[in-house]
Length: 573
Image 1 (tube, one colour):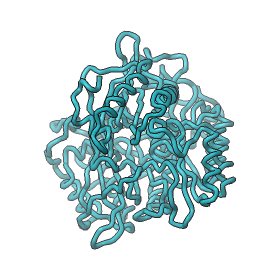
Image 2 (image 1 turned 90 degrees about the vertical axis):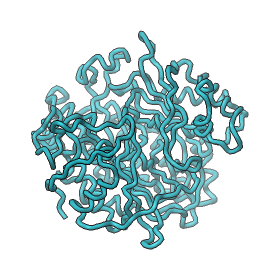
Image 3 (image 1 turned 135 degrees about the horizontal axis):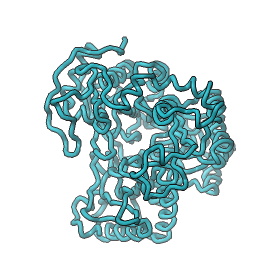
């Protein structure tokens, strides 16, 4: 079935819009292809209209890699290169006082961040060694595991990109549509086909989507980014509530194992949780349903204003009932059966620790501090995995790393060896549950350092709470700017980097957020305490103060987020 078409126009409904998520005005063109036509309405749309982003690959290989950084024209440098996972990184000489005052070009260095899409797939140790070698040879040993299961490098020169691509593609990896207004890298259960308790294996669906749709021009000009999450594990391990589209494994009483469809999630400065569309999707039709949803977004998404262009704004206007009707009538041409909601099984979706595989072996989850591991560290992980008899590794949407296929009698040795590397299978609650975005070190949008600061804060908190029985992880997420790449609104303690006043920088505090898990039935956004801001220097002390109040006041079995929900703001100061 072809999806590269313009459907019959329909008038948008005026459903109630959740607070903070407001659609664009209805009395003028909003750039919806199906209604307003395809004339571009802003400079970004002009760039996409003039040339498909995927076409820049030929210019990188044929021109830019030979003639260098200065040969790259502006529209490619700050636009189309993203379709191949390349962003200019921040000039190291520009401090936080320049953020928001200088242009993207003025803030940019002559080096790139380069993102490799992993798509939730399980990686061989051969693939891991290639990823590590690229870091060591071209990225000054930088390598971060992101909260979208991708790999990010820094300090990449355009001259080195062809060799990086050659190495990646030699082991079945790539950077295609890792950034840009495209279908970004998929989140997939890191224990797909492995875990003893999974409902179904989403690997065939992910592979079909990659093979069928990712290299097609049908979806390389979307209104904005399009994020996908797919899992068959009952821990709900792919943060399905905050993706544009999610397929969540369920067992339907009539139709058996399949997926519940969620659409319209996303955080940033206008957070909104995805909604259940209300349909059950059989595994064999899931790829077609994915293509229908992304086609609907392409055709009906708002393109006039980029800050109103994510799918969540269309869902906020339409609501799930209309979304389902348009999807079924105009794209699928059939009615899908009613679905059932997934129920979390109470286990942690980060998969840290020692767990059973369905084949009798074990998988072991480790916690790199805020995902920062480096090329040398990742190469060592491959060695230790193989020494334990494993040849497969996966990453999680929580910046964690799993070693799969470990024989039970070799688990103890693996855990000890990885601990020597700083990767713990039994980390402290803070080391396990702290995440951080790239931050001021390399990001042009950031106001504060995050990765290094988070690591220091974790070390400090472990000393402050030594000997304290903290029986529940308390998630601590640091973000360098308001865009919430580190998911600050869904953390127990979320920290948004900003200017505090004058030249002092620090964090606005969000408390009590979270996604559906063993200790909460549904997702909720963190509570912002009016006027509460914390400097980077004071951060460990603030976290200690709030956590100790929680421990003093909590009820039996009460989670941090439940305590926040019933407490007065004075407890959070």
